[in-house]
Length: 322
Image (cartoon, rainbow, N blue to C red; front, side, top):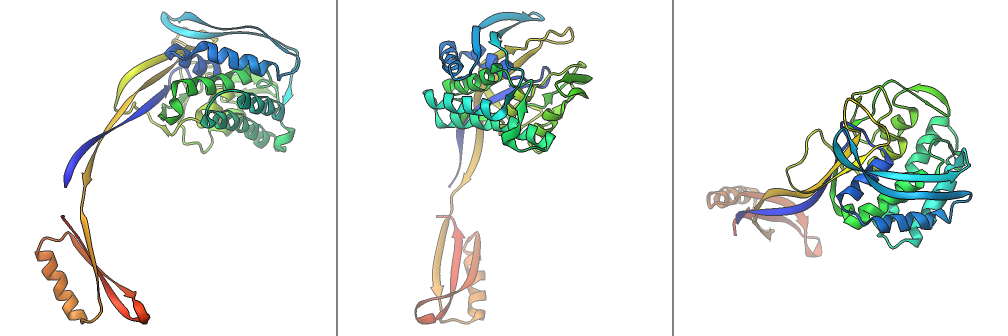
């Protein structure tokens, strides 16, 4: 029987080809799409108690305009005197936090895998054991906010079962200055995180950093595919997450689009007939194949086998319509 059947899957497109991606931009785009903000804030507040010497003074999501485009931006004020932290400290905070939260196992695994990606990248760059890695730019509690908040938001929307697609990622150009001095952009961590990930990177429109290590780590642990074009989809919701920087050339906004991916697959149902033949010659079998094919079989195969009492036989298989 030949027929067509339509299968529907949810697809989430992370469109980072213009403004790049950071952890807070992705989190804000999910909030803009309709995530329960209170659930995110409560989750982050629970993690705050696990981080020594950290006080979150202000945590909210506000509506802003970026070059006339309406978007959501993270408003975060933190008292944190630490200039650096071991990567394992940040990982421990995230691990303990996700165990306290009512989120899925997929969300927990994503959060832990994301911080491990950051740690591995730094370990590779500096050629030191992962347990010795120290974070500088990623040492702040905002790294926990980005990763933990994104995990909660994706879980709240049920996106971990989606087909997640990312467009080529704008990384910017020029130079970037950080704890290890000045480097051409993209910085070392970005290159290491995207290396062998299958995600395409592009320069972008400005000589500035457009993608952060945290944003890159989130992407490589989410994206199942990188594509220059959107897949065929019925759009259901769109989210716009604003970055902290402002650019004249474009709106510094990450766009995510969610919808139904509709694919028509052709199904071809056949029957397989099989029998053992152990008492005829090869000439008879060859003639049999011709006879069966003339009666409309799609294919005939014969393979050698052994049956009871070690007796050799030929297994005849016929593929045909029912």
